[in-house]
Image (cartoon, rainbow over all chains, first blue to last red; front, side, top):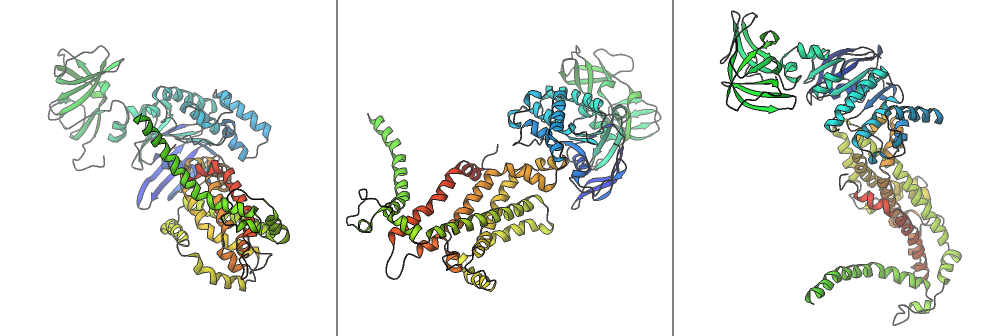
Length: 349
Length: 281
């Protein structure tokens, strides 16, 4: 079902947690709310679930205003970070709970529980209690409980954050497939930009309660709307060089590069993969010192310094350079992003 | 040799301490039960007949057949059970509301302290006002009077105990139940209450014991056989001319039993209930 936030604000006392949020989510979309902790993404989800009231603004589910509709009548399913499995019930009872509350008859309940359990491959666990399950198994049960009743939308609050790295990647893939199979609108909250990039059809980046950008993962990555989005999305993070543009030249204390931009004070953002490192000088390269290299297996992160300016570059796995040795960089200025220069007094960024 | 002696000492000391504590706790009980089984002559024998005497059930017959101790026992049971049930239902709901709902002006905390403060003054100061109130309500010498009073006196205890247990239950669980489509009350009954069962059991045991043993209000508010509880009935055998030790002991021994059995049955929950929250996990 389509979901719409219209100028939604949430205040706890004087503290504004979500400010003037407007989002339109289409039917069947997988939208990820991405942001650092305290950015209001979980509060947004909880407002949609009806677990938190709205201070001002409107929330629509399927074009129906739901501001005053109690949680139980919104017909949404939610997966909690803690999984929130009922500890005193067996796995089968846990999954059947939403059906039991809806007074579905026993046979139908059983049939649906079995079908979902088969889908998530947790049939052998049905008679156990939640405390006998591993984290990954609990995660599946929480998912099963959400999908057993075909709700209007799924809400997921950092569902993978309690899993170990390997399982997280595996579950991420399964979640994506599951959502494609079911085709149900899903809103997913995370602070992990890798999850956002891989899962989302569109990502809403939030910061301090304000929406920064709402776009496809590729656009978020390639055309960040502001410096925050540019910095938050991508790993390792984007490099920033403060300087100014004078007659087609970007000039900082250490670097001079030809760019095709109007004059002014700017902060140039350049992704690590757009800095190429050479051990020998080439045409149009600038010298830099190697601070340290980190071999990741399939690639190498090269930490560089040009005077006081620190940069990170991505290089091939076989790249080798001694610490403190001099290397030469080619910076792809046509892939660079330019943002207004950060004021030194502006601590909010 | 010295090590072994020290070992015996080390192990012996706790056993000795436990023995003394047990003796101190159980001696009066033993004495009461033996007196209830002795003839009147044996009761006053000097030196006392500690172990060897001719047992008789005469006092039990006197108490429960000739006199109305059976009636008192029934009254005590009804009053204790009904008032415990009332206190649990009202107190649990109140505690749930206090832990889960945000009241304006920090009222949640203020109300909790106010409820607790009703336990802080000595009960006896309310005896006369309660007597007058019950007289005007024409509830003197009724079980209803005792039920109302006991419920009122147990409520703060229930609220404070249950507040602690509810606070232990993660909010996520109830919110999950709400999102799953359950009502508040449904979530409370199906999800929260099963998780605080040990707490409920512990609280129930304490309420029952308090009601069962209560003497002051039962004495003030009931004077007739039909409304008298066991403690008042037992004390009533101390008269101007004689003290019926045998009958009192027999009644006392019987009075002790239900609580003993109940507490033993609930032991598992009691320990878990009282230590809940002490350790995470």
